[in-house]
Image (cartoon, rainbow, N blue to C red):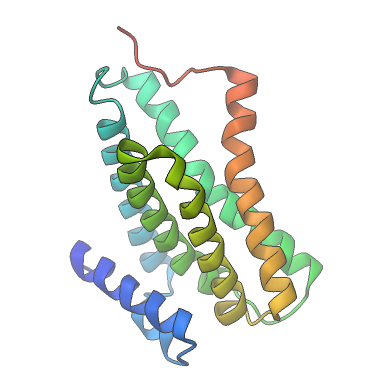
Amino acid sequence: MKIWAALKEALAGWIALIRGEADWIRHFAISAAGLTTALVLFLFFALLSIALASANVGMPNLFGLIIALVVQSLSIVALLVGIQITKRMVPGDARVMDLMVPGVYALIAYLVVGTVLSLIAGPVLILLWLGLAFLLFHLGWRAGGWNIGVSAAFAVLTMVLLVGMPVTLYMVLGPVAAPTP
């Protein structure tokens, strides 16, 4: 699958998912290959985000780059943990792959828009969090088949994990991903 075609289809899929269209799933490659494509795209945009964020101070060394990628990838872990906890609390027909593939594309959008906004207007990032929570709510509601309350709880849980995991890691390890002069 070509990169731009995958991103274009993901955008169309998210628009269909938010609108509540029944065929939203046809826009995503719900398979191991589709998830791999989404993850590779996420890592590509994470590297681009790190490069843009460190433009003024220089790229981090290899260890710093790896740590920065791990920290960026915690959002994927947060999404997966949010899905698994919700699935355990609310048994149903929700499939992890149906939630992960569109969810990773939402995280890509969050990463790209967040990088641009942080360079332009940092305080606007709170609105970006609300936007991502909105997407996660629709992900749980449409793709997970959960009711409105469970979908809202899924969105809140995932957002808490998304914000809390990097902060906790930073508090425990310190600024290990900071570039060296």
